[in-house]
Amino acid sequence: MANEAAIVELLGNGGDPISYTVADGVAVAKGSLMVLKGDRTIQVGSSDGDLFVGIATAEKVASDGTTTLAVYTNGIFDIMDQGPGMTLGVPAKIGTLPNRIVTADEAGVPYLTEMVGIVLETATGSEVVQVRVLK
Image 1 (tube, rainbow, N blue to C red):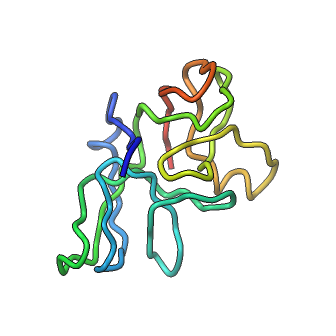
Image 2: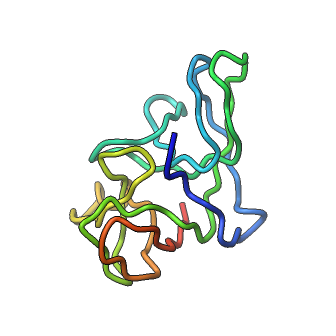
Image 3: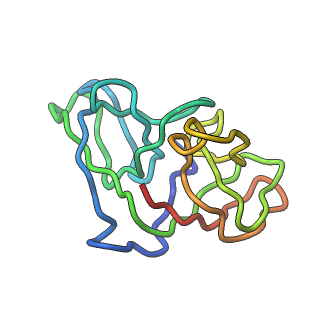
């Protein structure tokens, strides 16, 4: 994969990792933006409406027998903006490309569950921005 999030600073208790179920046959790169896709089951997010749960703490090799994966839920991360840009202080959600974010444009409950975090820098195009993640 490409454009995985990079740790800037882990907050709380080492990023407050939470473990979820992941399919054995799936590969996940460390730093992938993970979303809930079933009963406490996660996968890499890549569509509007995905329910963000955190950032993969480790690489998961496909068909390695592993069916659990932890995600960071508390920290500051460098994450790739999908474009056309982002403004300092806006909420961000999963984009339509893996490991990319876009400005969250909904209000209410869907907006809160989809939100990745608050953008801490202004982006003028498809570039990496710091995001405060707290799930």
